Amino acid sequence: MADIINLLPDNIANQIAAGEVIQRPASAVKELLENAVDAGASEIQLIIKDAGKELVQVIDNGKGMSETDARMSFERHATSKIKTIEDLFHIRTMGFRGEALASIAAVSQVELKTRLRGTDLGSYIEIDNSAIRKQEPCQTAEGTSIAMKNLFFNVPARRNFLKSNAAEMRHIVDEFIRVSMAYPQVQFTLTNNTQQLFYLEKGSLKQRIIAILGQHYNARLVSVKETTDYMDVNGFVGKPETAKKTRGDQFFFVNNRFIKSPYLNHAIMNAFAEMIPADSYPLYVLFIDLDPEHIDINVHPTKQEIKFDDDKLMYAFVQSAVKHALAQFSITPTLDFELDPGIQHLDAVSKPFTEQQQAQSANSSLYKTFTQANQAHVIDNNSNLKHWKDLYDIGKSTPDTGIRATREEQPSAFGAGFESRFSASVIDERWQDTTIDHKVPVQVHLQYILSQIKSGFILIDQQSAHERILYERYQRALLDSPVPVQQSLFPQTLPLLPADAALISEMLPDLQVLGYDLEPFGNNTFVVRGTPADIQTGNEQASIEGLLEQFKHFSNDLKVNRREQLVRSMAHNNSIPAGKSLSTREMQNIIDELFACAMPTSSPGGKYTYISFKLSDIAKMFG
Ligand code: ADP
Ligand code: MG
Image 1 (cartoon, rainbow, N blue to C red):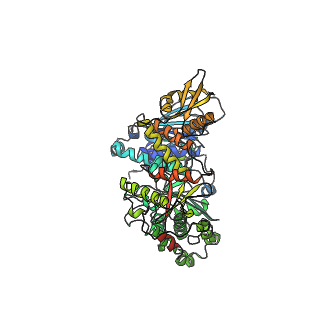
Image 2: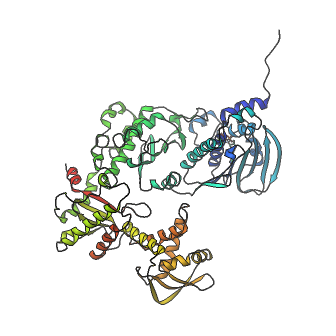
Image 3: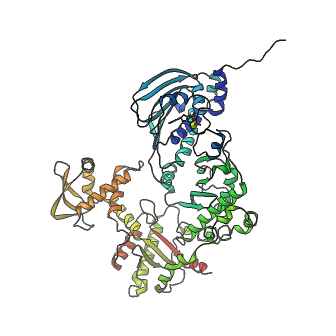
């Protein structure tokens, strides 16, 4: 006779529901960052205390909320992002369920400050345990700041389930990276207990990847880009040599949403097959964009799986896009210095993958729009071979007995032996044959220097090479051998902006050692008495202004100290640009000095300084 069913009180129902969305501090990080992105912010700060157990705060400069919306936003199923069920199939925002803020408010203490763009006064709201404690107008910046404090203060059992700070922090950083990777045009920072862990400038995807995953990927990323009517894929994969023994630097995004897909991962691994050891993992950061109609994002908010309406097609497409990118990169810049030249003869690259796949996918719309030129196996050899024809006059070389600058024989960190062997060989070759025209280096397109070596030839990028030379020279200058100053006949005054003048003042002693003789003249003005002897005089002002500009450009890279920035700036600024015609003598100097460098293979910024071409590989290319 006894009735035993009763309705759960709201706050308990809310707490239970919240458990689905907010499982740990990192879940709140994801939701709050996504809201900031959805609000159109261009700058987003994430502030963490005690691995998020004490505080997760996100401050954005997005569109903000009105007073009513601010209150409404914490209601369950309150969202501005969909209105009808139809909207669900066209959704482009990260959120749409209207559950995140309600969930956060159910399990923590929240302080919200927000000001709608273009209005004067903001709103402040304090909530805990789903109840509004305070609401009042306030002064605050345009945009929104949400602070989630003391997560699970009212659900001790869940609080006890949280892991160590290190583990929770790792989850937070993962979520931060997944969101910030997808929005390189937005500036993100992450601060933990007052220590800034990330400062990500606005920039290109490539810059973002390098800023997040490290400078070692610079010059080691291969661009992936395919476009069809059905879907686009773009992003980067790491060159095979960057594959790691541990999984990790692998990111897949569908319509900018991070997803985990063992299936698509497999497609990429397949594209890399035979290029990397079986138990290693290549970097990838790939974005697939397609009409939301073709995917079901209506899966659980904390799940990262996704359903496509045509899985097989996705697989084939992703695999082919990656293969195409890898194949292109192994052909242009023809035989890459860092790449095992055998790669392009592997089936994985050279065989048209469509052989097996075409039949099964022949009817799909994707393949109809997938133009011939986009397919993995079609590579326009003619354009790549143009240079080769131009170089035909250079003549036949001696048999392949000389040095090789290829990967197999290269010590991993270029030992002294390698450099001297190499430079000796280059020099020998040239000096023995100076009378023979065709052994003299040749400038190609006013940009590269072609120099014959015994095993083939090398193509030197004149600017990168000169940058490397100057960089090492300036580093030595700072250590013990100052760059000689060329005194100006007519000292010039150099008026600067106050900020620039302050910069120059700070750097004066270093600049002196590097060959700039400057003297403060008051009022943000300097007198230029001399410039480095090895740069052309006549335009001291432009030289210093260029240097300043370059320096500010490098200042964006937080990992490099000021002196290093200065040296890099000077090296870049004073290097011979592409487009400058060089005499034989100048080219010879560059070659000699480059191979006398400690690190001749790359510019200080990580670009290759030269690429080598072996006769044996060239012979292979001719079939
Ligand atoms: P959803 O994102 O699924 O809509 P949320 O609970 O995350 O649900 O947010 C509810 C609503 O609150 C959003 O639809 C949006 O209108 C508003 N909102 C949340 N965060 C912000 C923010 N940072 N800036 C502007 N509006 C926001
Ligand atoms: Mg949301």
